[in-house]
Image 1: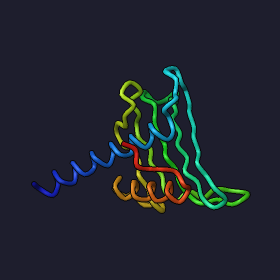
Image 2 (image 1 turned 120 degrees about the vertical axis):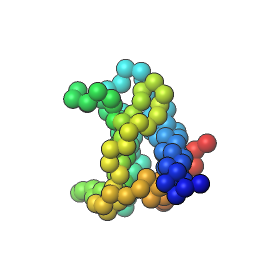
Image 3 (image 1 turned 60 degrees about the vertical axis):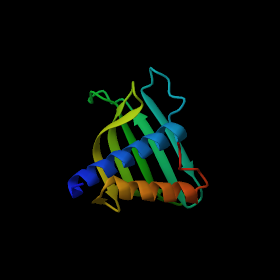
Image 4 (image 1 turned 135 degrees about the vertical axis):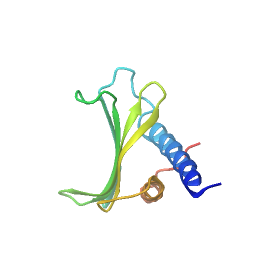
Length: 128
């Protein structure tokens, strides 16, 4: 198998795992006519936030996942993902942005960070 094909298959598996996490932890109860849904997991030091929104200027709704550190007064994001969301399939479409510490990265690195952050918050990240 070529490295490019292997990378593509690895990315597809990563996106599927991200979809399972999003559906299981954030949007399992989203109504068909939603315009925005948000779910945040947090403790005193860190947070993971999921948002699903249908912006008026975008043809497809988008999903955003943000994680970072926080204190009493503010949040400081350390990683984020933004992608189109297919309402009918409950699936991630085109990935627009994947960042860790302000740098673009592969979805696999973001997934590892997300799973670690959720584990630290006591939230099960492995969703079958």
